[in-house]
Length: 70
Image (cartoon, rainbow, N blue to C red; front, side, top):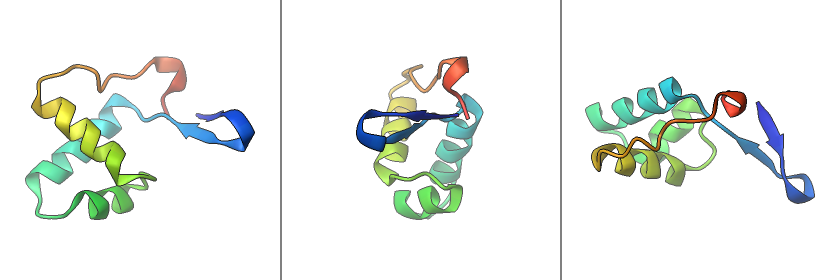
């Protein structure tokens, strides 16, 4: 689901499954954050970097609210 933000911004929210797929693809491959993000259609590779960092630190904050998930 796209959520409209201020001044026409659109915020995307990804499912936990999608995030885990992206994290595993990055961690098990030899491609950069940018390449993995582009392959999966993630607009900003920094978002993937944040997910990977949280995953590696054992944080459970990759979870999303159900009403916002794509």
